[in-house]
Image (cartoon, rainbow, N blue to C red; front, side):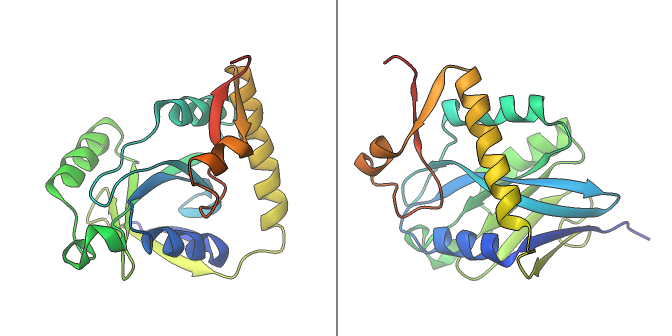
Length: 193
């Protein structure tokens, strides 16, 4: 019998992922979770970039920041996600591209515990050891009463990691590049620039 990992995704984060999938551009990021055995509680959505209708690649600065967060908080793990958005086209709503498959297979070779997720306006596809969706179940759950407190704490910890690396989050810059309609993606810049 296959052990099934159960991911509890709060409705608030599910709503944010659905909003991102409705955009014209693809986006990507990580879901931060803690685990107790095979039960994974997702606490935060961290965006790593927004791209074009057909491509997105993680921003190196945002990856550097989240990796510093993981160094400081080994109790957290990640689910790597990306969207196939409205702009990507309906053909891709229920399938992975060859590039997605190659990337996910490479990550599974490096880390057998890796979990990837493609989100479209109509479906979520899980990539994980075993048969993906058979070995890893995503349950959308009511947003827990302490979710927003955990999210604020995590946002503070991510900002501390950014400052430790010499970056600051800047809301004004985020508005200038048009990210204000996205969930908490704020531009970063080096302190002192």
